[in-house]
Length: 374
Image (cartoon, rainbow, N blue to C red; front, side, top):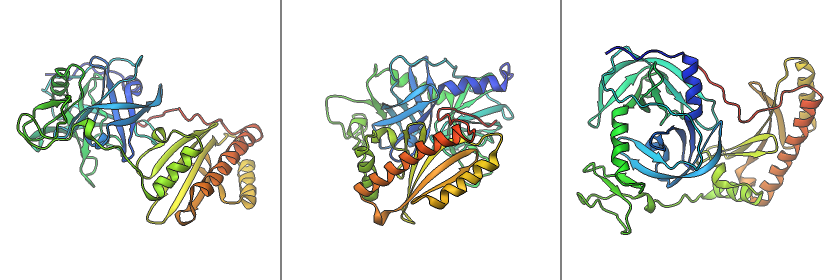
């Protein structure tokens, strides 16, 4: 069978930019994609593992909490509920299993904190088997956070779900074929909207019921229903940071980007907070505006002059972004001192953002802008 009629690469990338979803939990970040025909968001099970709710967002979708409605650990698949009035384009799933070695494919991903990426490659093996499941092996580079994103053919159709890579494997990636995805969706639909899990032992789907299920009703193996997953509870410095952010008025559920990372918006600035437990260092980076195309030397001079007088804060340039950073050691952190230091960061971020834009011609930072690599 011949490859489907090719589409322009940029056309495919632009289409998937609309339906690829960012996913974040207290433990990790990853990618998902919207399947309009079935009104589901698809991702990997390992992306949302041990969570009954997750955070989603993309360029046109406001950051929000949605429910996990299905998990399949064996095939590493999970489905998420869809917000009301979601307006995204439809893409097709290619259920034809007769892909060929050498076919061109495109892997796209959209992890939190990173830009939308698209990488090309070719299929190198269609019979690579792990745990009795055949995977599509290809060399389209999978970036950190790409797990759960779609693998796409030249016709712009989904042929797989990007699932894992071989460490130090020189761009060797593996994607679950779309046939497993469609089979799982059809089985899930038999539950008529009820959340469920797939039993690892007998492969049957088990749907939530009024009973407190701890064992598969088909084979008796232990299972964990979504309703029985315990909510995440931070501890230690993580709890101090989250208590500080909550007292400052931020929704902590929408702020989490993994166990040691948080992202918040304050005015026009996007602020990333990271805790490095090994060194005890907490860093708050407020991304302000972007470098102008002219008079950069004057702007650099201004930044250096300000750094001489700033206390506890540092201005720097990362790529094109102008960033103001706060450094705190965990041994000195409590909720009250953390609030004061963070409020100082907010105040200075707004102050410098205005001056850099109005006086030095810096470009206003568009925190929702998404770019891609191809």
